[in-house]
Image 1 (cartoon, rainbow, N blue to C red):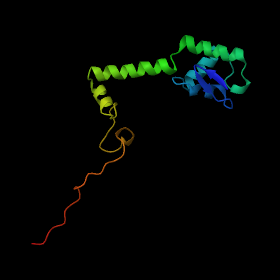
Image 2 (cartoon, one colour):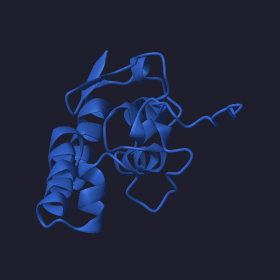
Image 3 (tube, rainbow, N blue to C red):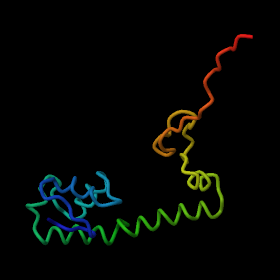
Image 4 (cartoon, rainbow, N blue to C red):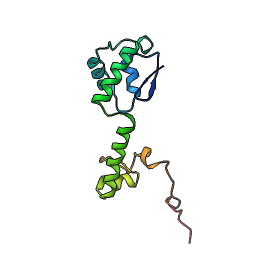
Length: 128
């Protein structure tokens, strides 16, 4: 098991896929990193040499913000939006979608389980 940026990446996957297990690295970034480190993208993690792993780690540490540092930056940005009480900050505070999605229906992931309100059914007419 190889460790890159503090993350243990799986041995049985190709290196370009395994790098996406690191927070902040997607498929495109992964391929760019491997190109800079001069490592074949199709090679399995278990076949990597220590020299290749160190090259990859060096490229990541020099050119990219990943893992804990990136999470700190993102959470700091969200906290700043909340502190200045911007529209997006208020939406974050209320756990609602922040980028203009509708909430009358959908948005279940952000809003949580549906709570049924009693007394909304039509009342039967009483005979008089």
